[in-house]
Length: 418
Ligand code: MG
Image 1 (cartoon, rainbow, N blue to C red):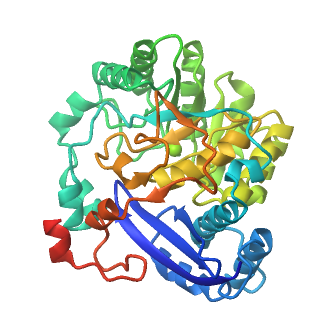
Image 2: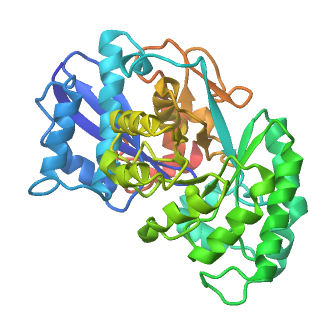
């Protein structure tokens, strides 16, 4: 099965969802998704030159080929891996279609019939419909224009708002949730400080308690701190939250200080997690060997691909460390990740980051259902490959201006009227 062409398309959801199609001489087309990055589709086009003419079934060999092509001796991190990850997923999709087998089967077979999704709830805020504005300038511009005022912030980041948001997600069927704790609040003594004051810590504990209590005793809840804090502050929060029996506390200290995670983990029974900024098995090995975290959260559209994700899961399993992939992708990347989650022995939960994107489900064409996530779980289906195709009518409507749509130029005027 020779690779004949590779094409990309970018859809503007809450991020630039970047799709890769790998075309073959068997007529089989593999579909994958990459984590967004500046210049990403240009990197994918460059990488395609070392893939065209190769056998699409030799995924591991092609991975090494792309790795070596990205630097003299092969790079070990950075956005080239976002590109490689999406191409890797598309190759797995093509291989599964060729063998008429779902990808999880090729990764060792399924451990479960459905994959638990956790709903990312941000903070106590539902993002307003924004896609029209996004089309007029991109997500960053939109986010700046819609940044809440100080008055709005005081209303958004409250224990009541967190509780409401938790109840809404549980009503949708989710059995696991995640909230942000590093939100603007009146107790911050200094902007951008790594320090959490005593009063701010009490406020964070109040937000967390409210969300956990509203979620109820059967629903797992984790919190993300986005790498913002110093050692003492991170430890203070991790210890204060111990009575809440959290699923995990994510990224309490800066990514460049991941050595601090070991000491934090040793001093608290709150499980600490990290991983969305790391690449390859080698990026995770030091954390596993030192037992710096209780849960790893690689992003499978970024870390090096589905096979690399499976290797990380297996390696973590040998250390009895859980596997809860980070995920901000559309249904294509989410379902691709779900194959690894179905096969991983130490799977905990897979992120779903699209609660507030109204067309998230519409982008997916599934042979057996309309909703990607059913009652908080992604069903593991028998469809060959990754088992989802892109709804091109919907994708075209939100396609990023200036980016090719699988080789086609999108007419913005037609897009506006469709
Ligand atoms: Mg995070």
